[in-house]
Image: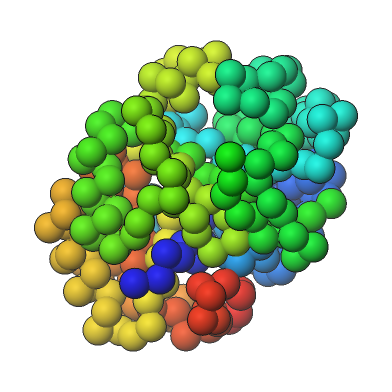
Length: 140
Length: 140
């Protein structure tokens, strides 16, 4: 079976607030949006931000909780870029959780939450390859 | 800036139990594992499953909650494959949340939780293209 994930969908409370974070913070452009969801074409998969009530209705399950036990990472090309991007994301409606510093496993990383308390790690990790299309390959 | 996400990391309670679900359910093979984390090379990014206590220590934030307000989707190539995969994931330690049926936006989908209550949508969506490498492109 394909080692493949098609979509990551984040439950959000406010479409405009979330879009400001992803647009002005990361500089990303939606590929589709309507009154309840925004989709972004990513590197080989799709990121969605969906009003949490609609997500719960589709899932037939209430009470999804934030912050959830997961993190999303965006790797950048230099050590200097880590804190710069964290600051830009915080200015776009995010909340800095941990300033950039060096973890035991190497590289450099910090954490910032989006306006719905979904956690992003911003990292410089020279072991991971990222090609011109943004496709990421694991490495130590 | 690249519209790129490098890693999705799920907080888990038990490495072996989680690995059984991803290996026997999805049929996926880790690219790296140690005493606290397992990584899978995915379609253009990396999926990690990390002991939640270690994740919280790195994040310097306790109390990450499950189920979180997010879903992951794996799209399959036929309608018939949706429920078959849900059943296989449930047999590998998952919990079926919603049996396959047709959502208002078209296609077919169901939901299953992994052993740590992270929600997977299994979907057939003819609008999305998936190439031989598993790279997914948004479509209506």
